[in-house]
Image (cartoon, one colour):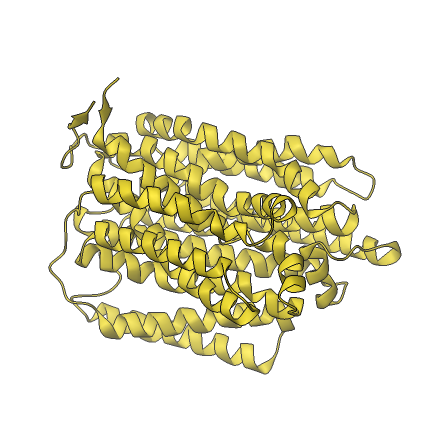
Length: 480
């Protein structure tokens, strides 16, 4: 059977996106083991997660822009190499400080891959075939962040926490080979780097992201209030600078497209609301039902396996009928799943999680490929990298926000340090405290439901994107 070369391009793209997404959360259920092995307090170990989310939230837009300017292939391949090296260094870390530092390195590589994967697909697939390609990469992104939690529990329990990092090394090396051989550089924009824009946006997002993570750890304090204010002020400055710069970091002309605007908004809200549900369910299973990290993760496996298999199918469907219907229906199924989770109490059979996770996994597999292809279909050819980077940046910021949301809202009635122990699987609540925590969990799910509902509204009213049959370079080449 003949294979098109662009099909081989999907191998490193899917692997890169999946590894990057998985490692954003894979350490969640490994935290107690890591803390014990490295003799570190849980309050410090939590930065193994937060460091990755912080870098992903801040840097993805910039790496997408660099892909437009230099070469998407160069930035993606460099990201693959950096991520693989960072994974190895994380695995051999002798103390918590080194591990956190190397997580920053790993996250930078993951962000370089995430920022350019969508634009590489846009370079190699015509608009009317991109949904199928995004369906395959959605196997990585859609399942990755949540599957990371599952794999973290399984790998840590069976072979040790260092292998949650070592496993990336052979996968990264093999994927880099395919990336070097088959990815084409793609088109480039003859523009200069927007240094003021890069510096201002980095400072703004860093301040906001750090304030959010500090709030998660310590609650509302003068430090994070100040950083949050500075961050939003710098965003205003950034917008002013960009509107007067012909080499602006963000292509503001893209925001004149209704499909693009609403698709980006839907992506952010889906990430913010949906991933928070996964965190909340993990806290419910471990803190209230007494399940081990491994058992908790296994209950979530069926939904994400199904989502991985059905992603390409729904991506191909979006090629034929457009993104609005499958993406909106997908968010509707996520809302149904959240409603079902709201009915859980202290006596609900834990295996009820399985059918609900299947519903949510099916919904996310409908949403991701359709929404991603709509973003790229509504972006001009010269701005694929910037559009892809912006899409991932908003999703990453939503992921960071979902962690803050899950911890903050669900723990109103219990001490924050207890919530971290519950989240990490080293503490269980009993008596009146468990009832209070259950109330907090239901409140957090209600907030997530509302966020996903607003995202569904944006998805429904976005309009129909343009999917011409124009063929990019090498689209008709085949290999035996």
